[in-house]
Image 1 (spheres, helix red, strand yellow):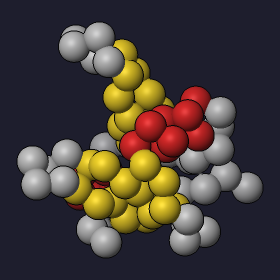
Image 2 (cartoon, rainbow, N blue to C red; image 1 turned 90 degrees about the vertical axis):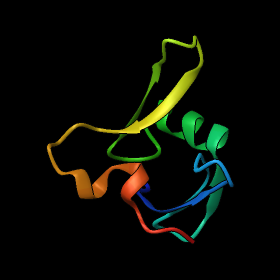
Image 3 (cartoon, rainbow, N blue to C red; image 1 turned 30 degrees about the horizontal axis):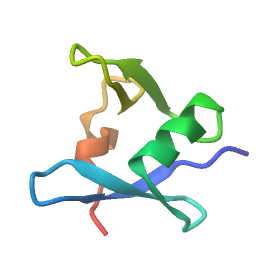
Image 4 (cartoon, rainbow, N blue to C red; image 1 turned 180 degrees about the horizontal axis):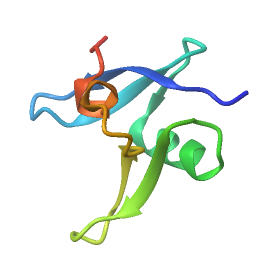
Length: 74
């Protein structure tokens, strides 16, 4: 069974830098991207932004409460 992101940690600019997974494991942003690409984290995907960088986002489901920015912070 794949992990889910349950909480996030943001830096002083408000950018997500770490994520807590359903198992309690804490991973950094790049590690979470790799895990998402490998299908190890549910309900998220990566995409290439206009800036040319790869970004992580929650799957679009019409529920803003489970967007990464709206998850609890730890």
